[in-house]
Length: 400
Image 1 (cartoon, rainbow, N blue to C red):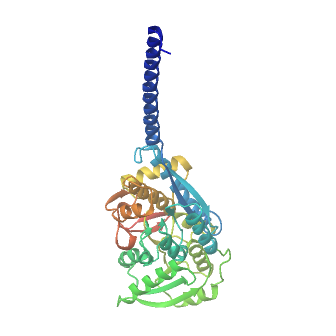
Image 2: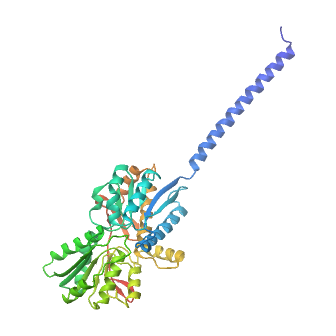
Image 3: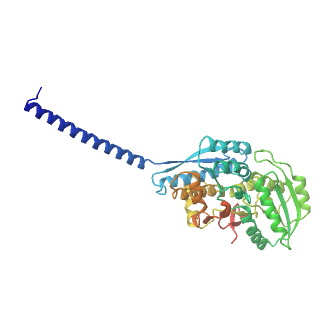
C-alpha cells in the first residue's frame, strides 16, 4: 500500500522530531556527564589521618596537651587554602599509656581503618614496638614526641618531628656547664623506658668525654609507662646526697621526672640543681605546687618554650590561649607542629597514599614552624635548634 503525500509529509515530520529529540537527549546526557565530572572534581577529599596518643593513664595529661595542639592545627589547615577544598580528619585512638594497647591500636589503624599516616605513637617505647608493622604495611608514622636516638634507621616510613636526644644533650651540657661550671654530676634513669635509657646513654657518654667532669653517683630503677605506682628510691637518693654532686641529671618520662624531683626534695636535696631533658612547664608547675618550689633552678634541654620570640610561635601561643584559655606546654607545640608539617607535605602530593607522602616528607627543608626553621634529616629525624632554659619563679627563662 502506497502512502499519500500527506502521509509522507507526516512521516518526515515525525522523523525530524525524533532526530531532534535524539540530539537534545545526547546534549543533555553530555551536559549531565560534564556536571558529574565537575562535581567529582569539586568534591572535597577526606584526608583520614590516624592519631595514636595516651589520652588517659599516667601519660594522659601530656597526650591530651599534644592532642589540643593537633586539633588547633587541623582546624587552621582546614580553614586555610593550603589543601584547597580538601579536609584533614582525625581517627583518634587513646592507648591509655599502655604499650600493649598502643600496639593493638596501631595495628587496627593500619589493617582496619586503612590510614596511610598515623600521628604518633607518643613514646619511644611505643614507636620502637610498632616500627616493624609500619615497615611491613608501608604506613607512615609521624611522631610528635618520640625522642630516643637512632629509632628512625629502622624504617623509611618513620618520621619524628621532635628533636632526638642526641641532638639536644651535647648542646645542653655545653650550655649548662658554662652556666654552672659543674664538675661532679649524678644521674637518675628509668631503665624500663626506651627514651629514658637513650637520654641517659647520651648524657653519660657526653660527660665521660669531658676530663673536667666525673659521675659521682648513679641511680637506676625500672617503671613501666602504664604503671600508676612509682618506686621508692628515697634510700638511694639519701646516698646520692652524701656524694655531694654539683648537678643531678634525670632521664625519664613525665611521671618519672616529677616523682624523682619530689622524692629528692623530701630527703633534703634542696640546693643541687636538676638537669632534665624535655622537662615541661606543666611538670614544673605541678612539682612546685606539691614540693614547695622543688623545681626552682632546674634546667631543661627542650625543643620549644612559650618565651620563644619566633613569629610562628607567637601566633600559635596567641591562638592556643584564645581557644583553651591556658598557656601551651611543649607537648601542645609539638602536636601542633606535627600537623602543620604533615599538611605541608599533603599540599604537594598528587595521591593520598603513603609512598607519595613519605617521599615529600623526606624532602622537607627549611619549613617555617613554631620551632623556627625545620627540616627532616637523615632517617626521618628532625633538625632545628634546641632550647636550653632554667626555671625561675615557676617559669622558664631561656639561656642564650
